[in-house]
Length: 196
Image 1 (tube, rainbow, N blue to C red):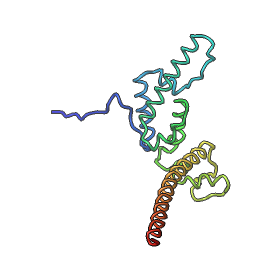
Image 2: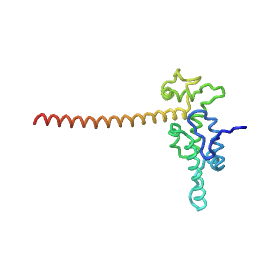
Image 3: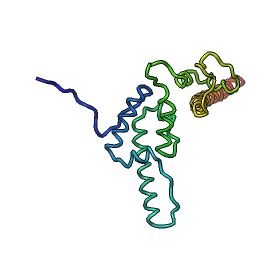
Image 4: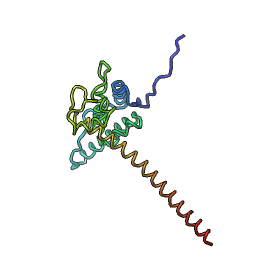
């Protein structure tokens, strides 16, 4: 007797966790198309708001804006927290899809060898420093040139890491200042009690 395991949910998008992008991309495309072909059109073609002069144009804009929001929501639901941090600021679903493609689509070569984009993301600092050092050799592949998008993405990722660390340090400093104030008050109280 044949036994079948439970399949994936048809109501939840496939989850991308930073690996196997091309497989996830295909699954996500099919998932979105199964929800609504117009959603996929918004992702592929994007949309530009027409001037809101007539009621019909406002209605079309509203419809496209809703489709864009739904598409972005589905995309974000299909990304883990780490990946979603890299694209959540995008304003359009097409922009989000293209940024995911820039960040992860170039990493997968047919032969499985790491690409320049993969090396850049694994050594972000070297990629950013490549702007000032034209002869970087450690992770430069065959070429020392990175596209603006690759450098921007590396910078964005570094900046996000910096902000996270900065926030943690500010909390630690605030906590230390409170403890220092408490110790000073305790010391003053102790000195006052000794004087009496």
